[in-house]
Length: 214
Image 1 (cartoon, one colour):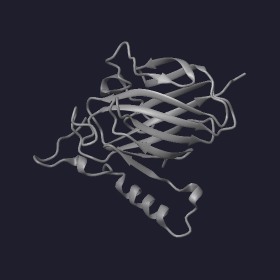
Image 2 (cartoon, rainbow, N blue to C red; image 1 turned 90 degrees about the horizontal axis):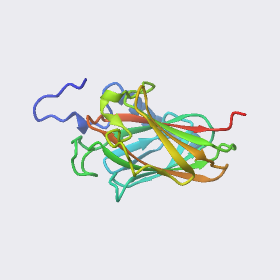
Image 3 (cartoon, rainbow, N blue to C red; image 1 turned 90 degrees about the vertical axis):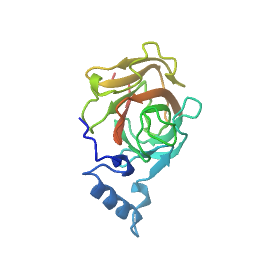
């Protein structure tokens, strides 16, 4: 449930929601401190109305661009060093306005392109994305946040290496790419649409590469 603020006041002016501001400030101080190891440095990439962070660890963002429209999607470039799930932290950096102009508002319509370098040393045979409004809690059907669940026949879901996909909306919002392979040191691309009809200022995208089990 969301509680409206006083008239004329937009809580979306703040980059970080209450309860995370102190952690964000501490993170900024640590990453800028002399002697901080660059191998562990967390970078926040801002583009359009959002910022993208690898602060939860396990992977590295190497680039971000775009505003989130179909013609100019949000393009995130990453490197994954293991075949274990990692979580991309996404925050709004501009005011939230549902269906507002892309790039000027966090409008809840996010065309995404994720380019992932497989630096895990193992081949991936599937790749799954999961949306979370609250970290480590499933994004349920009724929260308005999904991989475009209103569209029953999407034509904007694509991968360079996987031929098919499955979407799951209950009890999780998940998108699984399958019937393909990503060899070590190869880059795979994914395209999809994320929609949030009750936009939040912080949310998460879990990325789970799958390896052969046999």
